[in-house]
Amino acid sequence: MIGWVGWVPIAVALAGGSAVAAPPPTAPAMSPTVAGDPAAVRKAMQDELGRSMSDLRLGDESRPYYLAYTIYDLEQATVSATLGAVTAAHAYRGRVLRTDLRVGDPSFDNTNFEGGARVETVPLEDDYAALRRELWLRTDEAYKAAVESLARKRAAAAGQAAAADDESVGDFSKEAAVRLEIPFAAGPADPEALREMVRRLSSLLIEFPQIASSHVTATTAIVRRRLLSSEGTFVDDSQRTVRVDVIADTQADDGMKLRSFVPFTALTPAGLPALAEMEKAVRAMAKELSAMRTAPVASSGAGAVLFEGPAAAQIVKQLLGDQVAGTPPPKTSSASSDDGGEQSAFASKLGQKVAAPILSAVDDPLLEVGPGKAPLYGSYRIDDEGVPAQKVSLVEHGVLKSLLMSRTPRKEITHSNGHARAPRFAAARARVGTLVVTGAHGLSQAALMAELGKIAKGGGVTTYVVRLLDDDSLPGADADDLAALLSFSGGGHGPPPVRPLVVYRVDHGKETLVRGVLLENLQPRSLKDVTAMGNDATVYNYLEAGAGFSGIPSTIIAPALLVSDVDIRRGSGKNRKPPLYPSPLTLPSPLTLQLR
Image (tube, rainbow, N blue to C red; front, side, top):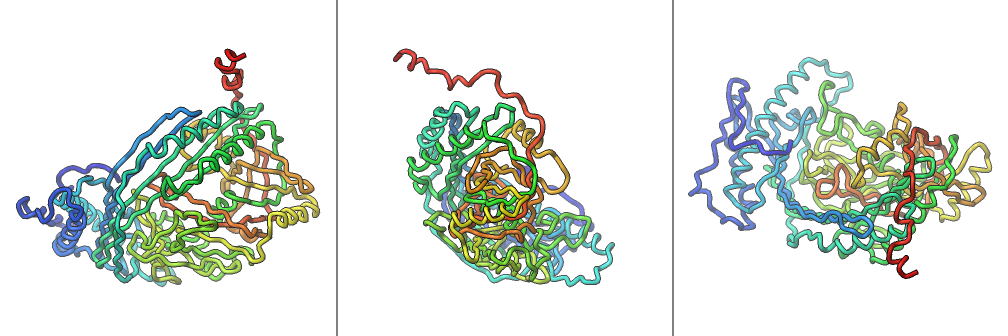
């Protein structure tokens, strides 16, 4: 929980005692660094961690066996504009502390049961005394919570019979200590660096009066991370991301809401594509969305779908990237785990066929650039539990070979492979870094279209090309948008349908833009229905589980995927009536009338 917790540690009673960690030393003794000294942060972390490991105790309860502090220094600048007018421009600075404290021992501790790491905001200034005090308070709170959680976990375990196949491997894997220090290049996140670009991109939408609303949002984030653990690990590194989203909405004459977007990503503002290139992409998106208003509505039935461009990476994220975390379920069925309480779809399928034989996948956070020298959000060297990142071969010719692991072990994989990643305000769990999908005998775009034609000749199947899927993490979505999407999806049972935004029906090689398409029953097992793959890959950078500095920078690199068996459903539901009279952008401007 984020927020201020007051000036005094919360008193608790447990096992007849109370925490007895002493207050920090008095002010005269607490001045090894001066306020504003960059060394103050690391020194405060080291001193308080050492004192906590030796002095922190609660009655007869054991001291912590593991303690880690992570301090994030956060800077973010955001600029938004509509039709050439800047609507928001602001910058933010903050500092967040994550405290990961474990009691018990690695075979059975307070984790993988309930709760997780504790995250709080702390002072921005590099003031040794202020930081020591905050570290003391947060550690005290974390210890009390950990002791209580361990007691509840023991009680729950005692009330359950061990499963016949239970082969416990513990709650925490032992990993070697590491040290990584990369000089931090200071420089504030400045909204002015984005203002003119955002204004110009948004002004392009004036040329398309059929678009009912549009906005451009650009965010640059700089995150410096300092991680110190009782095992001797120390990491001081940083990450930068820039994302620009150009989003447009409109309505067809029958009231159906339509949306499209185009994202641009880089590590710094200077790394974004040239403005002319971005303008070209925005105009193409707007022209396509305008044409969608009069496009025919798709029919329900059996279909085959070729996912191209961003849509290929987006569907890989849903069907594969979100399904390969290896964190086991909690040891007691009555509690939720740090990893969300449920196993990923592939966690129990090691050694089994999970995809077509032509498909292979690795997760390699050590990659620094993608195809065409594209920047990769998912590149890092040390994960959020202080373990070096590793390249992991997940799927080989359709067979699941491994899983992404944090330091919570499982029977089949007892050590981390450096994939524990944390949103800035939550606990770490196994997640994608840079997921790269490759295919045997990759085909050209023309050959893929020929494969679609062969499927269509078999009869009873309509073929489609999907080039963009909806993304619920886009900035600016409001309650009305959400209600419309829920109505559009039909609210049925089972997994929610996949909603494409840009869809073309293919008939004898001719593409026709259609709307109102839902893809049903696309589940992880649908990877077995991949019958062909492209030979060109698309890089898709995104922020997992958050936006701006709070999200986890991740990357999917995937070629086009042809899925031969997809249920197509025509979108239905009640639509709001479109506006009763045209947009003023369709009218001549006063300046134009004067010139006439």
